[in-house]
Length: 450
Ligand code: PHE
Image 1: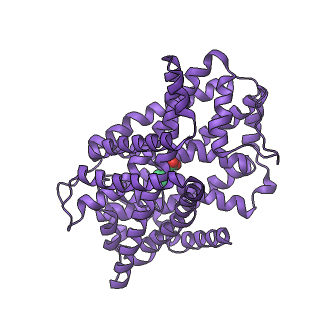
Image 2: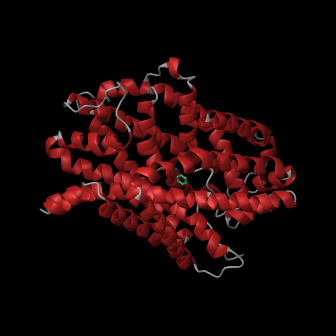
Image 3: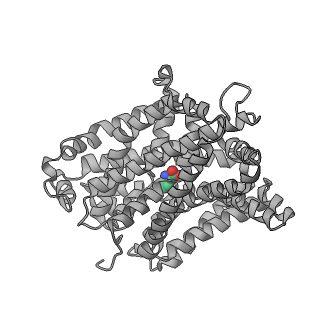
């Protein structure tokens, strides 16, 4: 137990956890959802839900994890009050392990596409026209190879461990990613048409704010984006030193996640209007902004093409940005089952063996999904992100709020945060995860299933 790894510094943890949080959900999901749900109105509701609902759930996961200092099943069982809630904890953790493995499955597929779109212009520059075309044609062999290659990269990082793998890679890639995104925003902002996009993005149409659809989507987005309800933040919390103030660390991670989502909106929405200015269709027949895969793989590449000499560097930069964001998230996904297997008392797997074993299972799932793309791809996404993550997040709140003894909870948070009793956090959070979060998640959940 003493040998268990920890993040070496505050910076390392924040980069790793922000790296997990910031991913395709921010750079693709958030602008897409904003485009689909009334622009600024969506941004407004998303911000409120993130700070009022997602941050407290994030804290529940981080604190339970740091207290348990082991795999998620062990941590959850450690805060369970009695035998029934211990049994239930085993079940909830097992559900989370399945859920995060399935998230890794669809995420690897999408991330694989990002990598192929990153490589395509490079192949073109190298004069390899046929290879370049193969990379961007939607076909099963390409999809399988790209997803498995991305998964292999994830395994390579994870097998190096918490400090040399997760922390080292996140600490290098995250600052680089921020530079890329800012450079792209500045470039796009200078193009004709960008101003209209900015207006559409930032002007909330308040008549949309109370639409149930919009609220449900914003909550789903907030949960997915902060990597909640799947055990990732619990496992990352388990590597945080007791010297650190976990309340502040959680706030930094939330702020970075929101900041990058908002920046991504500043990039994508104006880019769409620049595309329109250049004669590319950006609205569907029904009059909504084009979103989803069409936006990323059709509108944006067409936009880059229309920008002449800048086209190749732009698309390399954009898809590199996407690939990096995806990698720092996928490693956090793989870490959850890998920690479980390599730290399980009854199993004797090394970290690398565990990573390979989980990856093989996920690879099988990837192949099954890709061979039945129409039937399974969307279904896996909605089972994990719409149904499972909110439900598991709700259970985590119940453990943090109800099962876990209040004084023990306080003792855990006090480590690294002297005087927490007097803080606003302690005045609000315990009651909040007890009543408000479960209730709100439940209301939105029931609404969304109707
Ligand atoms: N938060 C990541 C993103 O925004 C996705 C993720 C979900 C990561 C669940 C880990 C766990 O892309």
